[in-house]
Image (cartoon, rainbow, N blue to C red; front, top):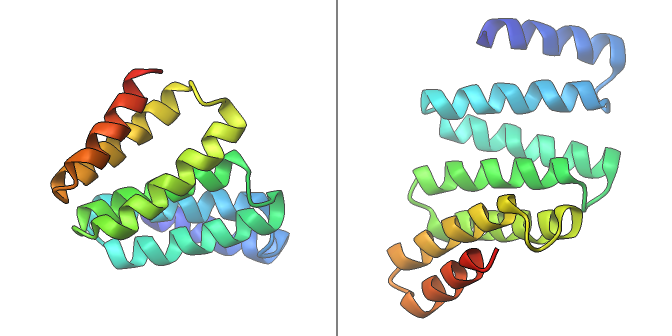
Length: 137
């Protein structure tokens, strides 16, 4: 699948240009495969590109930006970089709350992830706050 996505990316970039939603989707898919394979640094580079492209195409508060930010948070978490993971998840919560509403299941899942990271960082008060907010959904 990876080589196919890379081939598709080349074709899409040539035919559609780099500032196209299809290119963003393909980059996101490649980043997801990289993350699954443990190529975390490359995945982060691609997610950053995806976020930049999606912000340019759709604006800063589009659901696609939130999805990519959450994926980036997952990669940071796997790397043990809880500070950057929390920043990415918080951005995803902010955007998803605007797009889907504060009581969305997606928002609750992200709040749970934030609570887990706060707990792992030994910030128990913050962990309790995030988990409590998630449970209210």
